[in-house]
Image (cartoon, rainbow, N blue to C red; front, side, top):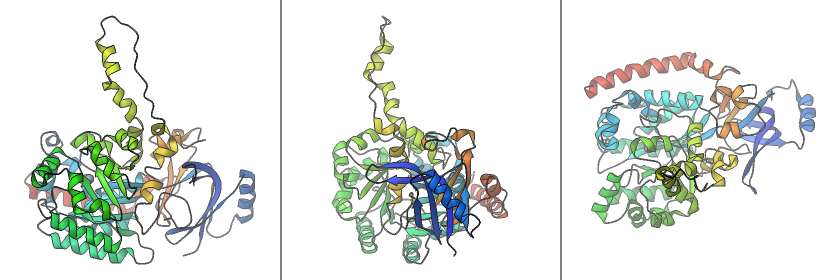
Length: 476
Ligand SMILES: [Zn+2]
């Protein structure tokens, strides 16, 4: 494929030494699925001169009044699970989500359902400026096909479980999907990659944890799993092994030997257990919206104080209702202040009959409102989790996953900084998204053009048909 060059006066660059994202005039070269070169200019004037010189050349695109950023990396999701939005919304609050609802309905899913629903989740992600999803679900090959059709890059962890859950019945199918995905990730211009995906500490036996760990080491791929996501999980692991979920995985050798772990949720992890996760080979994933549905937000202030590596993702349960990472970022940035509502100082003020002025300590956690710090949780940090590729950054060798944001849109005004990407819902400002080297929509009417496309409309109709048939099979 010919070299594509994209010139933008406000291109996001990562300064590794300072750990900051900055806007600089640049020309980004893309070849096939990757960024092949980035030319950075010291001043806008120099950039302008070079742009004038190359104007009209084949494959040379000039983005005026735009910000060019990496596409987001969603480090934990289940793109097929959007159908749960429609299922038993009222029931969600009453039951143990994981077992009573998810496992029951999921046991009726066919591979065709998973493919069809995954396509819808992939479109939703693309419209939210997401270029890479860390996916964890049954029927990994169907998910890979859906992501590839829509154009998303996926790290797919076929869900493996042998003690309980809908994956037990056809375990071999999911294990074979791991083998197929591993072969696929080493093909040229791969867009589907493998992570080994034990479901969770309570649904996977000692023997299977060790088999998965050995395979992850032999293939040098990450292990992506749920960890400490419910009290039930903790209780079951504790009664089976006498250990906490983190302690149990320590005994299995996961923390010492896995090439990389991606641990979703980690709500029920004690401070003592957190101290076992300090190596950056271990990455915790905070999914605040989803966590508020099935439990409550994880203790990310403790993660931060313990110096742990962590990132932000959407997960994808019924109550989350969004693949929009910007919404998760805003919640994450507000965590230190949200806790003040329950702070002793504020409680004293509330109870004080004298009406004396409040004395609430502000407890500022500067990092949480730092634009670069928060964006790194959905750009470079999760973009470095898989040894077979890089994403979330605009530099040579990384996947060509880009978002062009229109500075004329009111949500970006006045457009001098990345604040409006970090703390705002500015998806309406997306002019276009490139994933794996291809622009996916029409310029200036990105979302509209995708939703009006024959490909999307066909996917939507098919998903409706599968959804209705699934409801009938489940007896709803
Ligand atoms: Zn999950």
